[in-house]
Amino acid sequence: MSWIVLESVTKRFSNVVAVNKVNLQIERQDFFTLLGPSGCGKTTTLRLIAGLEFPDEGKIYIAQRDVTMELPKNRNVAMVFQNYALYPHMTVRENIAYPLLVRKVPKKEIERKVAFVAESLQISDLLERYPQQISGGQQQRVALARAVIQTPNVFLLDEPLSNLDAKLRIEARSFLKRLSMELGTSVVYVTHDQSEAMALSTKIAVMNQGHVLQVGTPRQIYDTPANTFVASFIGNPPMNIVECRFDGPACILDGQKIDLSELALIEFPKERGFIGIRPENIALNTKEGDLVGEVYVVEPLGFETVVTVKVNMNSLRVLVFEDVPYRSGDRIFLKFRKDKLHVFDEN
Ligand code: ADP
Ligand code: MG
Image (tube, rainbow, N blue to C red; front, side, top):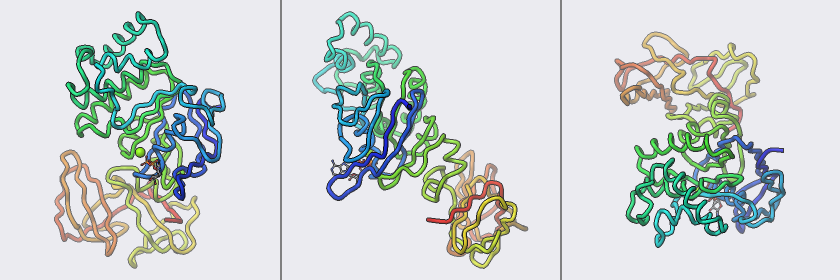
């Protein structure tokens, strides 16, 4: 049995189904991320694992034990919230020590552990300050310190980096990844940021409207998305997804026929469907290709350039890794890497 198991878990708030028949299997060594748009049920799922909510249906197991109706204190979980929730009237030292104090751990051991955790999180010189006397990034480290000083069955982190500015968020992300490798137990992480999920996770569960749509490694989710929602949620810029008419091993887009016979192994949609292709898997040139369109706009980003091409009503983004000679209004051909082309038969 996996370390954490959710078995067909459903949670309703009056007429909203926040979490809908969710099944998850999380291993002890996993950095497991719940990824999805705002309101899809990520926080509720985390709170169900913590015991801060109880499911209407289904079962939850932690460390081989049925904890479905157990209170948080009987689950041995550590949770870090989006807003850190440090105690303002306690020093940093007291904040970090608090979980051990309530468990009546001997004073000497508390001192030793606080010193060790503060050292590894590089906040030793802040121990006598109050939360309002330190920066947002430092507060976030204190919140993490308070979590990692425990030896829980699982660390539950709900968007712990979302209050940080962009630069600090990238730094904290690397730090969190290193830290998680040393925690020795599973982390269940919540974010709506696909790049954060890709960078940190061993496994990602993509959620939408209370459902888990796909679970896999970052590579699996990126390379073989199960449907158009997952495909368009992952990647930056996201995968191009275009509706078209299928005609055997070919699709027709605005009257232009794209030969897909190289993809002979997959089943093609009967009538209408979607093709998906990531921006880095399209090449541009002025002579020939799979589709012809018009350059809409060129956006140089330093290392890469994003070229948006209009093919009638459709916009396709192309990622190019050199300077491009094209300008808005130019007629341009798109050539697809056929081995990287996806076909979806639903929206
Ligand atoms: P996420 O964390 O992915 O943004 P949530 O789990 O917070 O999503 O919310 C999922 C859905 O459940 C949303 O529609 C939200 O409005 C609803 N919801 C969450 N908590 C409550 C609550 N305590 N009372 C009523 N509705 C709630
Ligand atoms: Mg949330």
